[in-house]
Image 1 (cartoon, rainbow, N blue to C red):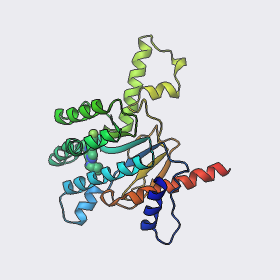
Image 2 (cartoon, helix red, strand yellow):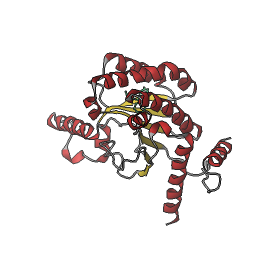
Image 3 (cartoon, helix red, strand yellow):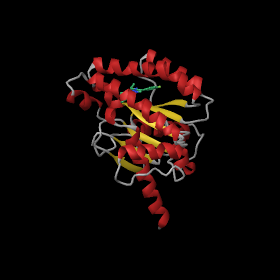
Image 4 (tube, rainbow, N blue to C red):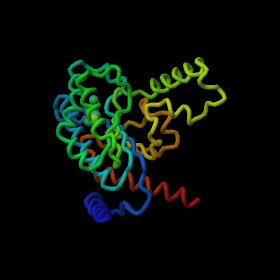
Length: 256
Ligand code: V0D
């Protein structure tokens, strides 16, 4: 079944070149995605930026389905950074309504697919209506055992690390933790990504070749994959191409 899907897509994407997703091969356990290029996509069409964000939301739905279909266990989508608050007020207000909009049409189906929804980031500055929708979705999917779908929202990696260090310092000062006990595992427990394994693959769309304060600690050993394709134009085929290239890299490591 999965093999059939992968072949079909590989034919559509590259009829002549050999691009084959090996569904019996190594599938990354955790894929993180920087969904860039929504504003540029809109500008190219003389549309308002928010039209790009809405188109980008459609892509999220498609890519989540594609990830689920090949048994990926964790997806982390960078939806809103701590820097994004500096954008125009109207754009921020629009963005903050997207989780509700997404969940109102998708949550039932995600529940059916056994998907678990989690938020990664600081809940502090989020508007009540956004937080309520998120927490309801987290609550309703808490016991699901399929794909874990993380939305990085109001997320900044350095802020996350500062928070972790401050909490650890407080534990030490309270005598609950000894400096000698500190190791990578302890640090992991104080990050937003506490119970999530490090990403195996990072995808960034829209041609920028940088991390932009996304999961700096967690990406230490991650394979990075960049494309010029803008997020609203990013398809399930592009996604499987990224996975196939990841498999190629994994095979080469395996060979040495
Ligand atoms: C805009 C492209 C889905 C990136 C995708 C609040 C920027 C569309 C969500 C979403 C955004 C978040 C949480 C959740 C369900 C859906 C989302 C934001 C922006 C920022 F539980 N897309 N999306 N959230 N964009």
